[in-house]
Image 1 (cartoon, rainbow, N blue to C red):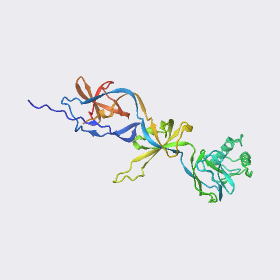
Image 2: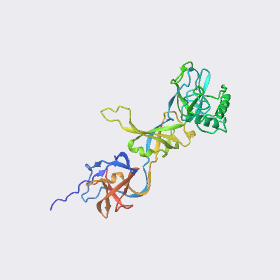
Image 3: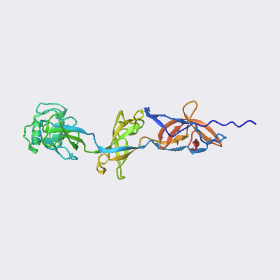
Image 4: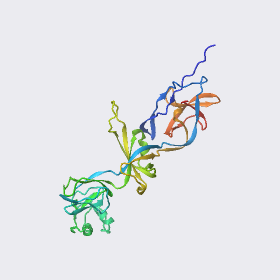
Length: 364
C-alpha cells in the first residue's frame, strides 16, 4: 500500500498585522505577513488542530495610545513698544480678557481677544480685521453696546475706546496700539518669563512665553492609525490617579514627521502624526504639566458584521485571503473580503459564510 499523502501546511495570517496606513475609499489597506506553520503539529485528515467561531457583532477599531497632559499651543509674546519692564505676572498665572499681561515704563499692556496680532496704532478712519477685533472686544466688554462690528474705525469706535481707556486709568485719546493692547485668540497661561524686571523690551523682544489656558493632551500615532483620530472623534482619557474623563480630538497634524530619537543600527526612525485632544469638562482635569496619560480612541464601528479572529485568515495561493471552514468533519477554504480590523478580530464577507461556522486557527 502506498503511503498516505499529507496535505500541505496552511498559511495562516499571523496576528502581527502591519496596517499600511493609506485609506482607500475609507477602508484601511493592510499588508499581511504569512506563517507556514512550521513546528506545529498537523493532523493527517486535513482538519485544523484548533477552531474558533464566526461571530456576528458590532466591531470597533478602538485602540489605546499614550499621551502627554499639557496646555494649548505655546508661543512667545513680544513687547509692544520700546521701554523698561516694570511688572510681569507670575509663572502659571492665567490672564483673561481685559486683564494685564505685563507692564513697560509703568504702563500696562492689556489682553483682548482676536486672531490677528496688534501691530499698528489704530485711529479714526483705519480699516481692517484688527479694527473689527477691537470693536468686538469693546462691545463684549460693555464699552460700545451700539457699535456695529465691522472693519471701519469710526467716531463711535473712538468714544467706546475712550470709555475703555478711562476704566484703566489711561489717557483718553480715542487711539490705541501695541503699547496698550495685545491680541490673543483666548485667555493665556504664563509658561515662562522671557524678561526680568528692569530689562529693556520692545518690538521683536520676547517678554513672556504663553500657552492657551485650557488643558489638552498631545498624542503621537503611527501613520497607519491616523484614521482613528479624525477631528471630532470622541475619546476617553485616563488621567494620573486613575480618573477617566471624556474628550474629543481637536486637530490632527497630517504632516508626518520622524521621531527625533537616534535609534542606531542604521534604522529609519518611525514616522508619526500628532493629534491634539481637548476635554469635555476642563474643570475635571487634575495633574501636573507634561504628566503621562492614556487616550482611548474609539475609532470606527461597523454594526452587525461577521467577524473571525485575525489569525484565522489564510494567505491563498492565488492571492487574497480566506478562511478554512470546518463542517461535517471536512475542511474547505472560502475566499473572504476583509473589512474593519479591531479587538483582535477582522470583519469578513463572502459567499457561503454564516454566523456560528467553525474556522481553523493556529494551535499555538
